[in-house]
Length: 110
Length: 113
Image (tube, rainbow over all chains, first blue to last red; front, side, top):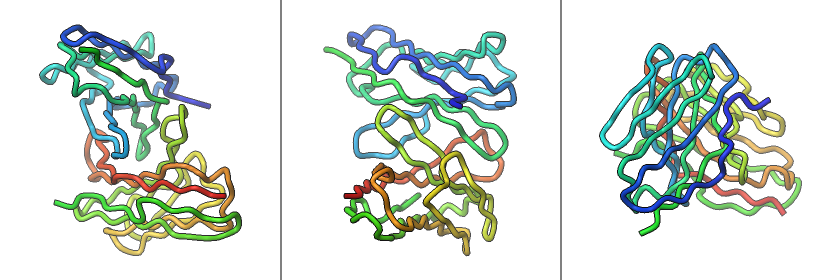
């Protein structure tokens, strides 16, 4: 039973434009939601998080939006840069554990 | 800063062999985790630990064992390796009170033939 879902396996975007990544979840007990970025042959690295009591968190080019009623969150990257090409994982925390989505591969075209 | 260190980075096993994936962290984190990543499947939690001497099962614990004798080390033991255990394994850690931000190692790629 997958509690965190990323339904888009890939996304291609032109450099300078906005990238929007989506994530849905089923467990109402999640208290934090996070996005991780992963390059090939490396471990995932933390990107940005949001508390379940907030609806928006911004950090530079990255903004995460949370819609609790829809059990949906999204990550906006503006403007997209070539170094943003990576796999992005959505994750959600409940107690000690984090559940991860399947990931979305972002390719930024020049 | 070393952070989370995993060894080995690559390993090929024959069916039925056993091995231990090592994980060490130098950040004095209480919480440690083992995940496996299969293509298109995201990260699945195998085992986790909230402190020395305390471990618990995650989503996919079958075929694995762990121990946590010190804060720094969290080895993952594979007994009787099977082709289904071919995967990339990630160890991670985090402090007790945080938003869930995990610090990951670089991963260990295991192939069982």
